[in-house]
Image (cartoon, rainbow, N blue to C red; front, side, top):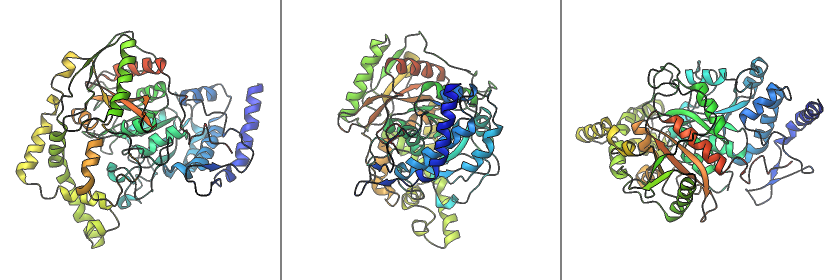
Length: 511
């Protein structure tokens, strides 16, 4: 009872402090620091709990879901002016929902953020574009319905680059990496990974259409999961499945991700037998192929290789068999065919934008220059090139050349380069000039989406060159999601990462 009373007093103080919390100012001349205006004290007492831990407090009546929501709202108001990863706050929607959420659900009312690329009924979905800045879906997709049924309370959406392309958002501005504010968070789930790394909430929804749960997790030191194609409930308005994009979690702990996976998995068995709850590692020792060099044509820098060598030692020390191989995918060939097969599908958008504005798409104000030039680059592909691209992806199942006939998993870097600094690719840059940078960053992750395999980025290293987090990507053949989660649990036990906090996070920011 004493703990309950002390928490009540604390939460009352949070309520009084909330209005002023958003007014913390930056130190003069330093965009990387927060200045406290009152004597330092912890931002709140719930910082070290993951989502299931917070749900446990609600179930034990040590805090209510409504009280916890106000704590999270306060965190967002304090930290977001520095990190900038919130696209649309949904505070009032969450306040209305909190009293109705049952405590016997898995997450019992714990707040969550969702990526601004999925339909949530009554909540703006922009996909990071001015073209859709007023788009408000009427209905939630099946994935979101299951997410909310599990007891998660949506408190806002997270920033994305326009239509999941590029590294920064023209609509919302730059999202800063909580480990170093001068660095990017990488790819379209950048806002989601930043929110987890900064401690807004411990669990955030993300989508992965070419590496977007794995690349930001690599950059931000979080755990990012991409499920097998068709494994999850539909995240599309028509009830179908995107051939590349999947929905899952970016999180601080493996168990939070696994719990959300279980809550949103398609239990029908149409594509895969459901795997259900996953609570612990497996005792099975795995045969792991290790491709340190990345896909052909995109060599990996030495500092990233050095970080992966540490992971190989960790795996062999745990008793797994690791054998070095050359990556089976030709990355240059992959992106040549990707451009031929998919960019022409977006060219009608150029005519739509011109019809609305009477201007060239680059000058329309509705599309960033980056997006407009990317789509334009596919406008002049001939029929032979388009047919070649489509044929390549129709045979995508052969892309990994039998690797999973011999090995259980494939270990690679997440990306061949260090996390780039902000401004490496700007929304007003030209695709023709910098598209090769974006493709290089995605050169290891994107082929996974093409074949429909499952994969994860695990935060096991830091770069000796930049000091930034470095993820390791583990890939399993489609349907092998349980194997990945079981290995993730084992790696988390062997080298815990939950309590490694970024400098610009709720753990280190005081008011």
